Image 1 (cartoon, rainbow, N blue to C red):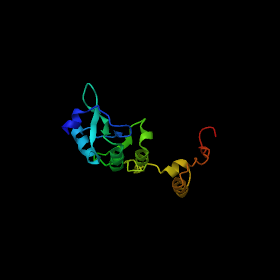
Image 2: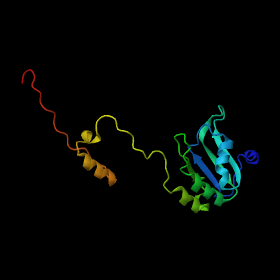
Image 3: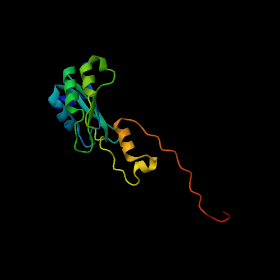
Image 4: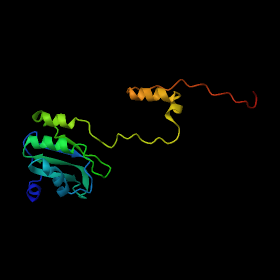
Length: 163
């Protein structure tokens, strides 16, 4: 770990450098290194921090000695549940995609993101707001279609003075 920390800022060969989003802000560089070291020899593993406050910015870079290690890290850590309400998103460093097509394929495999749970709807059923039957809304959702709201009915005239 000390050797990797001493090399902070170093980069590996083209295609061996990965970008990690959604890093928990309480992770240290040592935690970061520990999570990514099983996939291969690390040249550098660094969480980016604010230069003034030293607070984590929630992302980091890992540079491996080989593109194969970077691919394995993407396969093993993309979608990793940090148990803090976040799932890591791990991608090949921008601009290096052509040097590691296996990593690009690995990063494009669907993984858990935590966003797949539908939010709990509180209040009016969406079918009431749209003026369409609930089954029609469910059918459209399962087919990836969007329904337009039913035409609005004019408001009822209320009896009042002078009518």
